[in-house]
Length: 421
Image (cartoon, rainbow, N blue to C red; front, side, top):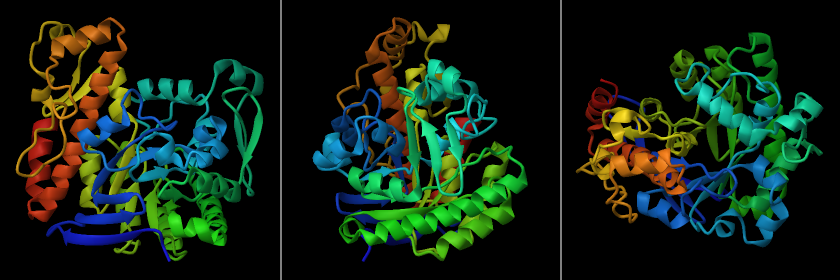
């Protein structure tokens, strides 16, 4: 018996978009839903209570980082990741596969979730800061080596040697105790040759079978936690379709669409995979947070999203607005006394998400936050991060309500025209 159930409330008329509810032991997730990323059991600079006020219903944490620090045993002793971080609601953990990619194939290369993403250089720089230390890198070279049995990697914290196998990843994630977690997979760069994409995909399938077996052998964990398989295959639509069929046949509780894309390949890879997956399974598009890409994913039947972009952009002084991105470090923002709340993804008949006002931060102006950021004050990064989380959470919740009201196409078109026009 699965620890998760999924009810579909309504399908959109002209797309695969659907509104539903994922039921977990720690509460319900109304889908489509966006999960803020709390890599090390913290959404950077944002208190768990504020996440609730902003409209978050689920948080995603990172297996690789929590394994290294503070260790899965301590998290288990604390009652699991939700209790450990004072969140209490539904949680997700990834398998560590993307960190393997960052330490191995993508090591010291300008490759991010999207190879040609506008903020790629910024995100790559910060990814390296988060994933490895330059002094360790110079001593050890590439920090992860993949073989058919698993991955051997060097800790970015102290250079110590570690090994993940599918079974070890599942053991760690059982201890972390998230409501939903992912099978161990191999993520690939979009520019890897087809031959390697095929090899990595087939290895991911073998690891998926081993992950599922390890999970089911722990009967207690299987009652409390749901496991999602991950579709790989790079930019190749035939490989994506093949991977989706293979993962669908294994009997996972849900499915994630993984990997690293070039921007122009995302739609084709997504559509090829979705068409082969059972409609009744919840689907998660891993690492996707660009507003237009989120709406594209929803239109293709994706139920869950996660991404570090809202808080990462906020820390670097960039915020979402209904008219597109605004860089608060620009000169024009120095004297702009527009309330930040006026630049939120506004609540309407389609959206009842939280706001900066409900989170106790409704009086700040663009000029004030710009001042904080220019001054290096921590509060500036916090406010900008919260603003971005409110925006993306409201966007997705608005899309959910639009599906229920049979207005998703109109909702998507209106947002796209405003944001990208």
